[in-house]
Image 1 (cartoon, rainbow, N blue to C red):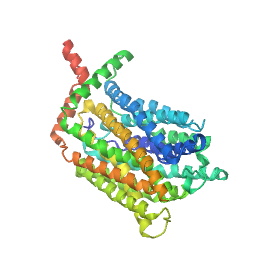
Image 2 (cartoon, rainbow, N blue to C red):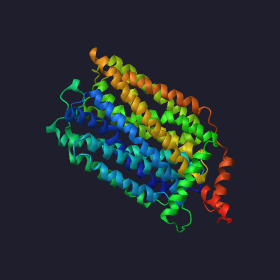
Image 3 (cartoon, rainbow, N blue to C red):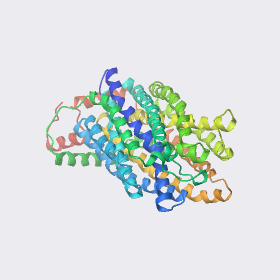
Image 4 (tube, rainbow, N blue to C red):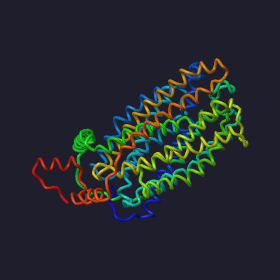
Length: 487
C-alpha cells in the first residue's frame, strides 16, 4: 500500500537504475557463467562427470539458500524499524560487487562457491530492500507501472552485459570458447577463468547504479536507536510477522502459491542458457547473440505486464505470465527431445520452437518479479511491507533450494540413461516437464487469493501515516508501557 499521493517521474527514473544495475549481475553471473563455471571446474580440476558437477552445484546452491532464508526477513524487519531502505540497498550491494570481482582468484569449487553464496545473499537482500522502497516512491495507482517500468528498464542493461561477455570472449579467443559439455568437445574455461571478466562485471554494475544514489524516498522521522535496541525490536517484529501472517490468509496463500511460480523463474534464470548450449547445441557466442532479440521483446513486454497489474489486477496478470511459461517450456521440451542437438538458426520448426521457448521463458522471468512486487504491495499493510517482502523471499529461496536439488537430481538420474542411447541432451526435456508441474501447482493456489479493496488499502495508508509510520512492534511496546505513539 502506497504512502505517497503523487508519483514523481524523475524519482522513479532514478530509482529504476538499480534494476538496470543488478540485471548486469543476474545476466552475467547467474544466467551465463556460474553453473557452467562450476561444471568446468568440477570436470577439469576434480575429475567429475558432467552430471556429477551439475549435482554438486545445485546441491550447494540449494543449501546456501538457508542463509538467505535466515537473514533476509531480519533485514526486512530492520528496514521497517528504521523507516528507510536506500542505505541498505547501497551498503549491501557493496558485498555483491566485492565478491563478484574475486570469482577468478582460484579455480577451486570451495572458493568459487563460497564467493557466489556471499554474492547471492547480498544480491537478494539488496533486492528485497529495493522492492520495499516502491510504496515510498509511487502512488497507489502507479505501483504496477513503477515495478513494470523499473523491470523493463532493467532489461536494457542485458544488451551491454551480453556485449561485455562477447567482448571478453573475443579478447580471450586464443583460449577458446567456454565449454562444459564433454560430448561437444574439450572442456574449457575460455574467458570464464580470467580476472577481467569479473572485475568488468562489477564495474558495469556500479556505473549503472550511480543514478540510484540520487533517489529520494519518503522516510519516517529520525529517532535515536542503539544497535542493540534495533536488533531486539527487529527480532520482535520478525516474530510477530511469523505469528500474524497465518491470520493474513490471502498473503499466506499468495506466498505459498508463488513458492512454486518463483521456483520456475529462479530455475529458468539459472539454466536457460545451459539448455541452449548443452541441450540445443548452440556454442557460447551464438547463444548470447540469440538472446539479444529476446531482450528487445522483453523490454517492450515487461512494462506492459506492470501496466496490466494496475489495470486488470496482479492476480489475472499472474495467469498471463503462467501462460507464457507453459507455452515456452512446452516448446522447449519438444525442441530438445526431437532437435537431436543439431538445431541451427534458420527458419525450421525446431528453431521456431526454440525461439518461442527463449522469448516466452525470458519474458516470463522478468514478468514474474513484476507480478510478485505488485501482488505483495497490494496485499501488505504499509507497516509490514519490508517484512512481507522479506517473508516472500524466504519462500522463494526455500523453493529455489528444493528446485535446485530436484533439477540437479534429475540431471544426475537420467543423464547416464540417455547418454547410453547417445542422446544425453534429452535429460533437459525431462527436467523441463518438472518445472511445468510446479508452475501448474502454483497457479492453482493463486486462484484462491483475494485482494483487499481500494478502500481497505486507503484506510491502511491513512492509519499508518496517522501513527507516525510506526511498526506494529513499536505500537505494541508503546501500548504496554502506557505511552501514546507520536503521530
